[in-house]
Length: 95
Figure 1 (cartoon, rainbow, N blue to C red):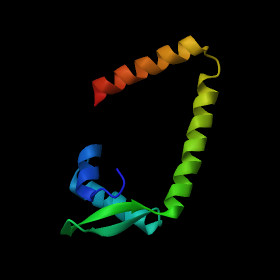
Figure 2: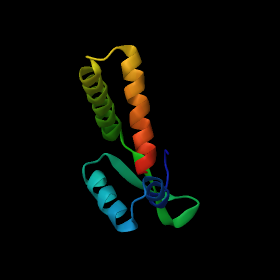
Figure 3: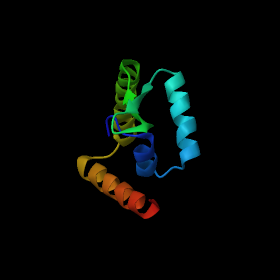
Figure 4: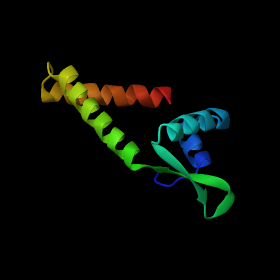
């Protein structure tokens, strides 16, 4: 959702407006994202990830992938696929 509005992202994440503003304020203070006036609606902002945000996100993905490999190391490929299938099923029931 690059350059999406705060409202669109809040709706996608299913969080209320106040919570979204708090998160955006925090991420912006850390220089991970930037608010940019929405060219289609001057009353709203689009959110854009900064270079610092991209670098941090890349590092997080590397850590996540390594953690997943470590956690699933004891499982064979069939067991990994089954485990992931069950997690997806659980997630569908929660969301």
